[in-house]
Length: 615
Image 1 (cartoon, one colour):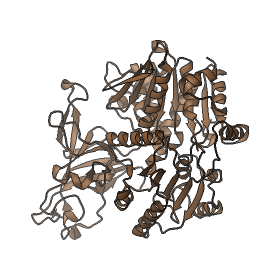
Image 2 (cartoon, helix red, strand yellow; image 1 turned 120 degrees about the vertical axis):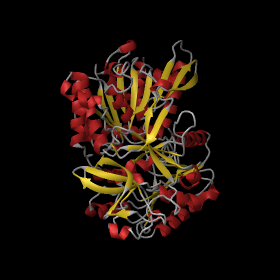
Image 3 (tube, one colour; image 1 turned 60 degrees about the vertical axis):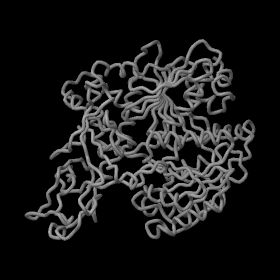
Image 4 (cartoon, helix red, strand yellow; image 1 turned 90 degrees about the vertical axis):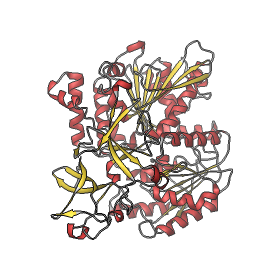
């Protein structure tokens, strides 16, 4: 189909130079393998998705995190509605979140939705995360259906050749990056069709891909002219003010006071304002200071229901031309198609700052858009820059004057580092599933697939449903968030109260407990769990763990608007044995609430072991 006609039908506007360039690159290659480098707000999603849909492909969109799925899901459903309008055929869409899915059927310009447990990659568009995609790729799941996913990822099942789109590729790091890189290389070598998109990923990452680059050269100039003339942009100006406030590590209260002051100074109910902090605890305190302005909140410890609600409110208000105030962490930087008048942010790493600034004056139609950066240094435990570059980074921001220029910061972007052990694990699973290497079969049989981090996750919840034992208000967290390093000798611990270190009342009542969970297959997959006490020594890599907060203490940790404002501590970091770190679960205590120490050792209810790759 002719490109202009298809764009008008699918999205209601004409393609820009980037979208035309991607469409041409797609058509010129029988097996397209593309890398799209372009800034935020340039239409990368449409550029990669529409050529494949016009070609009758099954499109799988892979995102780094669940936080990005909600916005992308709504965008593709709108495209599906447009394409189904006046056509006899339906457009079907699955948003795959692992334990549950949302399916949309677009028919005659309308969409009909249903939630369900299973899907088999049969729809026209599938939106999922890298973690879930890897589980499908390696055939995990019900034994009778486990290999349907690989067949539909690589084959032309149901009459549709697959096309894989990897969005926000720069968000991967460490083990996740290793999985991502190995996956791309393998798909490319097997001649599979794919597209990678990123605003900040270094060009050398995809040197084996056909690159369409709108960040420099002729295409960048064409895009700037198109945005100015066709979209009636005033300019792409992003005003900049650098407020050199003390960092939170030195004076947290003063930092929050300045964040509040800078926000109130610019607050206008008709404007869209994003306020970003690095830590959830700072965000919660700032919410208390700004509560009279009725802000929304967005961070990684919101439940899926809360996250979906916030995103839908933001999109609806923006669509109607209304204002909002959103307090957020880095979770807001990627994926959400926001067009803010003002952003007030804590000083953060260069790549995060460029991503965040992409949400400012995104449409280029604002005369007075402003980026306000607060702080005189990045938090040390979050900084990705060496010491000498940190000072230069701050100096470059000062030298920008009153206009933010993201190109100045491109030199700070680093090639993401992978994890060699993760690459070995990927290769072994691939060799068994796709090459029949039986020596790797025990690995697959054990169900070992580490997708993002060697640290296993735990489902934090505020209770369990009475009949099904399914978690209430579930959210995934790393197991280390439940642990604390006390650092006391046994003699010192004899004098210490457990409640001074862990989440327990002085009367010995714990705020939360750890449980092992197993699907009750007789009741139907995913519909019921059997729960058991933790046990003496547990491998969290082979066990589903649940941290269940007691009903009495729910309000201390969970808020209906703010999500999980705190996390209970029920584990103590114990000794190391090679790469293993022992986590001790709930120490015994005396009647007076002190640690029960016998023979120079503390006794615990149970223990877990986790892999620590760094000392």
